[in-house]
Amino acid sequence: MYQALYRKWRPRTFSDVCGQDTVTTALKNELQTGRLSHAYLFTGCRGTGKTTCAKILAKAVNCQSPVEGDPCNECALCRGIDDGSVLDVTEIDAASNNGVDSIRELRDEVAFTPVSGKYRVYIIDEVHMLSAGAFNALLKTLEEPPAHVIFILATTEVHKLPATILSRCQRFDFNRIRPEAIAARIQYVAEQEGLTVTEEAAMLLARLADGALRDGLSLLDQCASVARHIDADTVAAVTGMASQEVLAALTACVAAGDAAGALEQIDRLHRSAKDMERLCAEWVTYMRNLMVLHSVKEPGELVIAAPQELEQMRKAAAGLGLPTILHIMEVLQSTLERLKGGVSRRVEMEMAVLRLCDPRLDTGTAALLHRIETLENQVRSGVPVAQTAPPAVPATPVSATAPATEEPPLPEPPDTAKPEAPTAPAASAPGDEQPFPQWAAVLEVLMTSCPPLFGVLADSSAILKDGKLLICTNNPLFSELIKDSGNQKLLTEAVQKGTGSSYRLGLRRTHVVAKQEADPLTQLLAAGRAAGVPVTEKE
Image (cartoon, rainbow, N blue to C red; front, side, top):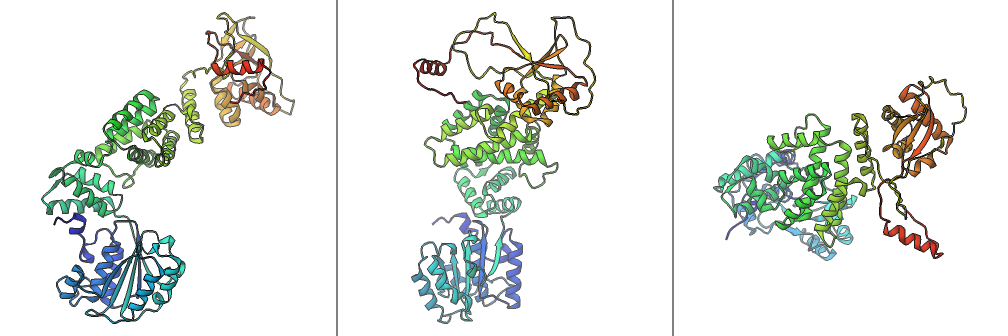
């Protein structure tokens, strides 16, 4: 019968264990010096060699001809432990034997001496699944077992073990295996099996394994059932992962605000049976790589990618600001959580890309930082910021010839020992209006001195008329903020600092000149008020 690659190529000696040199060296030294502990605890993520090392240790302590701490795998005891005929080594699955009765039976068995070997070895896998009563039943035996008994506990969630258990064991932590080591092992196994695996495909399998060699070999086994020659395209097709080009295209659509292009990408992936949860997770990993490349000059081993892919990601990271990258990652992380329990995964992904393409649809902190970053870049580069329509649409159409209205000058700030500012330049002819190009410098000062005022004036402009500086904005919040004397003073100081001159300030509202249809919600609210129904409109 065919045997899976991860079982067929399971290491049989400590020297064959991949990526756990610290653990294997310590265990070999203990075996050579005879300083064996009565209880070991192996902890780490899945597929890193915990159970493998436990079985090798069980063979090594009973081997009749050990070789520098490794079992010989040739004597009768080593062969018997491998095929399960030696009863002195018992492997227990704590997930299915987690009751107190199972531990009591084990406690009664440890009193018997070994049948054929030197030690009776009990390997308890997933030990964190034991119940509280089972842990209590194991405590005394674990602390003072008979001289011929060794316990080896293995777990992926060491934080669930009681402190009383931890203090009675010699602990070894198994780290995630480095991608380079996984790729090298995959290449070796493929060569032994008569397979051809390209270097790019091996690194892609190692990256998908996420530090677990067993997962990498399982993916190799899956690819081998499709083709004997395995390249990156084969791995992508078998695992259903999105290619680097697709992720780059999605990111480019988000950066350009191209919602239609992003939705077309999602539709194409959905029709090709791409799992949306897998796509979201891969996109998060891609954005994480962009974040690292944007923040670290020499990423080294922080980003695992082929040289060509690395260069493409560098270019993508250079075109995005760090607030934008963090905003995309935050939206994708929250989307990934909703995908696990959502009704339609495709709809969740489409909603996510729409929020990413138009940050105005997202009110989160990262989205606001992204919008501020965009405005800052426009102000610094001198690009005029598009005026936004007023939030409330009038119920009746506005005449196309409605003139702009000029409100009374803004109130002067209180006279508080302010330094004398330079006088304003000579006024132009009465009635003339001139654009005020220094308004961008005033906004840049406000960005630091008063962020709330900068927020409401970010899309504003200014003109000079009769020696007076008129602020042109349709944002109703400005009228409320400027009533505060402190904000008046901050605005005056920002004008003086940004322009080097002092001006009398005024406010000018520009009405919407295009004829607009009444909003249905506005009509409904107006009808309610006309009927005497108290209605409040909320933003």
